[in-house]
Length: 115
Image (tube, rainbow, N blue to C red; front, side, top):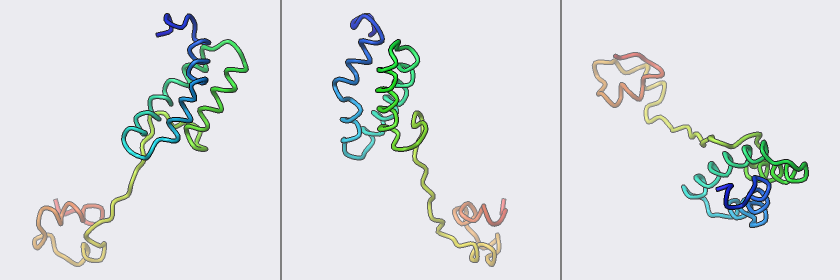
């Protein structure tokens, strides 16, 4: 792709001129936005390493910070969600393993080893 533009500087200039990062940030939440953020998060640091002018490096750095939303690096990161357990710790402790089914044993695993 660099051959089309002639240099990494030209590619970075084109990427920033089209306001690609602003478009990604403005996208509605969903898998498409996450995919675009991960892709741009991987491309921008590589561009920053290869461009020659300090002005472009500064613009790329600001684009990375906009994309990551105040975190140091968003490349390859995914949101983690803690799921609520259907069985409480109290329930798991008081119920014997013999009375539990497979799913109950699995959900009580952090509190009790029935396997």
